[in-house]
Amino acid sequence: MLIFRALVMFLVVAAAVCFGFYAATGQPQYKRYAFVIIKWTLIAALMFFAVLFLERIV
Image 1 (cartoon, rainbow, N blue to C red):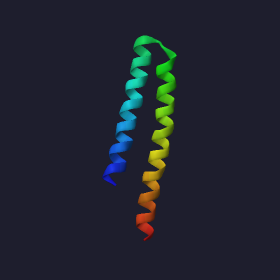
Image 2: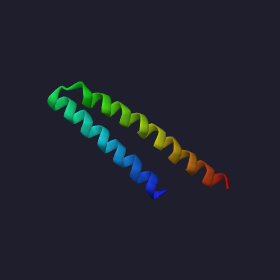
Image 3: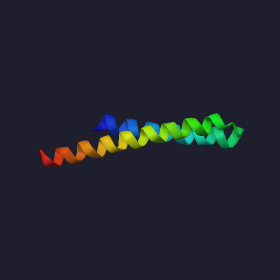
Image 4: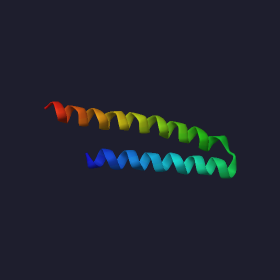
């Protein structure tokens, strides 16, 4: 569980850094990277909540 939580927090920070770079430079590649990272963050968060749910069932 700690690994999932750390992974999600790392991805959130990485997306924030990408948006910060986009705001500072205005280059659209950083915005694309941030949206890809957000997609992976949502996938990791869904896996985290699925594991929490399955732990409660079992």
